[in-house]
Image 1: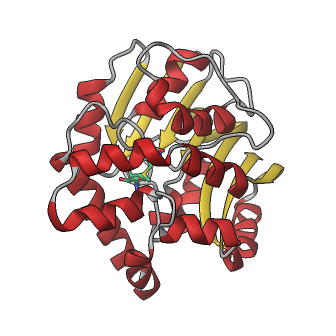
Image 2 (image 1 turned 90 degrees about the vertical axis):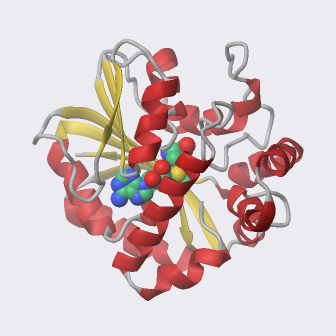
Length: 268
Ligand SMILES: C[S@@+](CC[C@H](N)C(=O)[O-])C[C@H]1O[C@@H](n2cnc3c(N)ncnc32)[C@H](O)[C@@H]1O
């Protein structure tokens, strides 16, 4: 999640950007250990008609965030595959993928140790595990993974080039890289070049800003009430912004096209 509060830091240096995001996610996982907050993305909803994917009881509140995962991860058949999510956050997405899309193994990796602890405490499923690790130096051996999933995490990385090279290294030949994230619109050309330089073939490049904004608006009331209830004091305003409620900077910039949200399907 990207907001103007942090935009200043993001422009200073990659190292500082990494450090600021890391501290923030470490803090959030420790300060708010509530099980009712398993996802940290802006969500996805089709603009034509509701996606209405079937969900188990108790998952309805997370529908839009789950739908982003569903949209990204169903781009290829994950059944019986070895799948890794980089930037797994509070673990909801990796858990959804394991339970609904039935890969053989599913590993969530995040550089926030607190988020990994939270994920291990809250998501228990055979074949699902979480481990601490850095996207720019993945703790995985060469050619050991069929599919890498990466949802709304890469904007925090110091070097996108290092990350994409790592993904290429750990994927098996013809493995898939399922990517979704937001960027200032002028950075997309560089993103394309980074994928291309690492040796990826682009099978699909899809602008999904409208669908993300649609989800933000549909989810507004619930999210506002949720954060109002949970967050006290000075963090209230920045967290509303961070969470992408209606009228937040990120909602405005995704609506006016200054920021864009893309989904890519890439093959090694
Ligand atoms: C906006 S959250 C998204 C979490 C999850 N993908 C979701 O949609 O719920 C971004 C996540 O990326 C993680 N992250 C940021 N930089 C990372 C890095 N260099 N290596 C691994 N994880 C990272 C953060 O700790 C955070 O959990």
